[in-house]
Length: 305
Image (cartoon, rainbow, N blue to C red):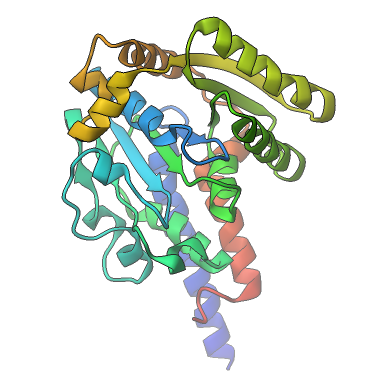
């Protein structure tokens, strides 16, 4: 029994060291910028924003990786017209490693596809959450920017990736439900997870003034009730070219490079590349993973399954 306990302790310590070391390679503050794109409500354009930024950065020669973190209704691969064999569900099942499911998108960007229509992937336990993030420890990709495209809502996975990122990008449109859901997400992250800085994209607006007004509506309630700092970083116009590019299964900056939406997304990507990496290590993915591992170790979940 003593030997069994020692072996278990050794396995835990070795696993934590190896996986944390791998994540340090991916999220080293001098190398990798981690941006989570979220918003609370579905249909606000999170994935189009994510892919537009990714393509614009990749065109500049940056090594970009996109993680489709919508584990139940994944659509990044569909929007890009990519053929995907295995996805994150296979990684979670132990069928393959994370590196085995990565596919290449436009301009050399790397895509980590998720599953679609699998209920189990939307109801992960804490141990499975840890396993998913821990899988990044096996990656040896050299990445400048990791963009995480979250699911709609305020699930544990949305909160996890948001609090783990260096920058949280909140996408909102001028609808009461979008503003309400964005506020709910900001409230949870700020009050329960210590995330106090948010960057806001006003999407599908008819003018810059409308975008500013939308931002004002959101900040009016956050400044009154929350300890959160919001910054408007882009106003992306309502543009028919976006819908047309979706039909073509191409990113709008490639399908219609001179369109208003493409120009706004290029500007947003350029701005994002200048965002500094916070000195506080608590926002880095590796530290989030280690916290999850310690929590799971205490519960004895992931090694006893």
